Amino acid sequence: MQYLSDIMLETLKFFYAIGGHNWGFSIIWLTVVANLALYPLTLSSIQQMAAMQRIQPRLQNLQKKYKDDPKKLQQEMMDLYKIERVNPLGGCLPLLLKLPFFLALFWALQSPQFTALVGHEAVFIPGWIDDIAKHDPYFILPVLIGVSTWLSQKSMPSAPGQSQAMLWFMPIFITFISYNFAAGVQLYWFISNMMGWAQQAYIMQQKVPKRP
Picture 1: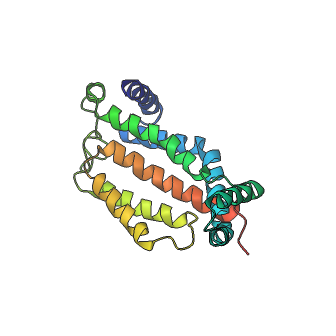
Picture 2: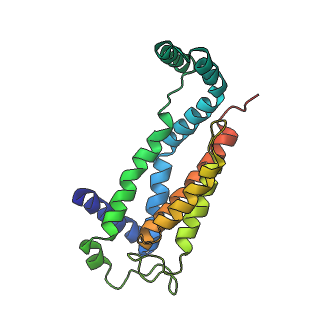
Picture 3: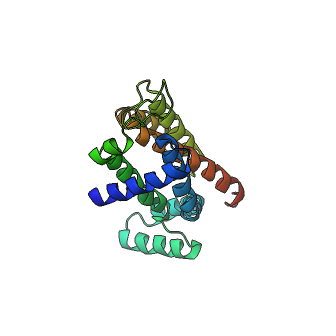
């Protein structure tokens, strides 16, 4: 944990030096660069999710056909994945790679080293976020996180029959749990969501074949 936190602090200092000497903007620059660097994986992930959506009817037919023969069902599904070049777990990779960034930033902003580093320069936007290491006092960023989570989910390929309740539950749940996070973490989460949403919308429009 300390190792990741120290790396994040050094990274933040770099973006602070080139990004206007504002810790909030340094987090924004960090988030933008991280998401751009992960774009190839995001592209692959969304294409895999779209492919999974495309073959869902065939998977359901196999499940009905071999419902009494689990071993045969497993083999037929693996053959289908191979023929269609689909990786069922391919959609999880960007999320797994973004998680260390989130955790490192979470630990870094709550560390004594960060408190000592920023001193009286922890202001992001005066009158709103006067301390990037404390939570948003007006609850604006958690709401923006919830809204951006909803937008991101809406732009993602979904399996037929996916519960619409989950589409609303997750943004509300995430809004609630992010309330007490440091404003810097909230800011990272919101910007990351918005970049993810923009990338997903672009990929679905330009990079994923339209379903007939």
